[in-house]
Image (cartoon, rainbow, N blue to C red; front, side, top):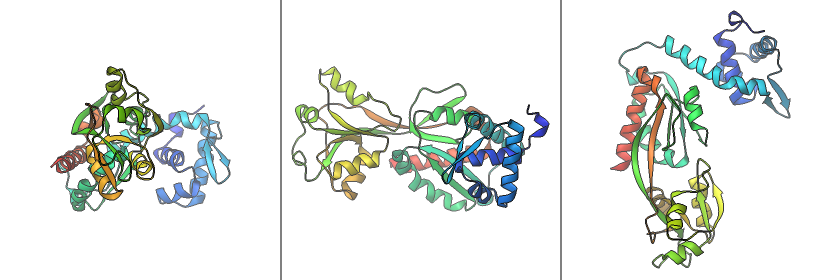
Length: 302
């Protein structure tokens, strides 16, 4: 049986890192420790939890069910420990030293990161790590695995807060060589043309489908991908159509040779939201980061 006195933050950091890297050597590098020390800590964790925790499969370590069950509570404990040790007060960007973890779709990254990185030039000690978000973004936020998320609005779990960053409208894109590229897109065209859909959270029925259903119509989606950029690449290299946010469509028109078409009916919009934990309001460094994200969103909307 594990007793609280047997655990320390160093061991928990090793466990959290191993769950992410699946490698003893990578964890040692991340924590700035020697590999033998990391191996000893893993052996101690195995003894404490009476479980292998990780099983070698080829070159990687695969977590056991017990290790996976520990992931969220360990992240939360580490986040609380960091909050306890972090001094309160005004944040000086130039002296800030912290790695922030942001959950985002590729659309969120493209809309926010360019302007955000310009702001972060004044904070050389800050590192951003983005992670792709799926349908479990709320749980990753609640557990503290993510500092914040930049994504479409979702039904939040208790303790989470959301603020709108920017609005976008849905438009249609095809390759410039597509038969529909130079004409006016009709409802019949939209329904008949095979489509690729970008759905970062894996939602099968979107606003587009709802708008068509209200007209008694249904489109033909042949590929669904969680990545907007993958959808644009597939459109550029084939005969597919995609419905995407207008800002992203303009980028694709310039870089991939896409034609942007006005939809024949209102296909809804796309609102990007900033989501974070309520408890993070008391963390001045996270408050500073949120302010920079909101400023970056304003710059992107200008």
